[in-house]
Image (cartoon, rainbow, N blue to C red; front, side, top):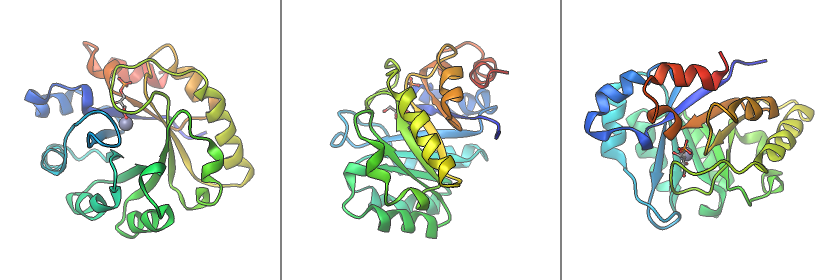
Length: 215
Ligand code: DX5
Ligand code: ZN
């Protein structure tokens, strides 16, 4: 079994002290960047200037989660900044196969994000092309929401499909993850756990990251 990876979502960090916050969370395997446009989700976050600053402040892989319409417009700019993982929501593109190939051709890992109510069957024709699937365990838009338990069954089903088809696709789970539900999400088959408020709301980020890993 592969070791679980933790993606610390900077959405809940103190942006006034970005440098310090990133180094306090540097036990994470990657930093998760929630990019929101106020159209696809009812919230605004940040774009390339902040992503570039984060890239300059850390060598840890960057995992961009685009909750925006027309995510294809950001593939090349994010690749040139040095983002390593790039996911977009299925509803936001007409030609997901093309966008996935575009992401991979620029050297990033490609993922598609599914909202809690979007069925796995929508991935049937694209799953073998994906490096990862991002399963939302809250409705996208905000950190600090409660984990939706029905997503556990979805993780189990996706893991089963991946195993039966001998795929290498990783499962990333995003939203409401804390020390109580992390072990259930890992047992269901997750490879990467995203966490914002649990990590950045704790006093000791390293301890919080360890507790999510169950170590
Ligand atoms: C929600 C974002 C999540 C969010 C997670 O739209 O995609 O990545 O930052 O926040 P927590 O861990 O607080 O639920
Ligand atoms: Zn996210």
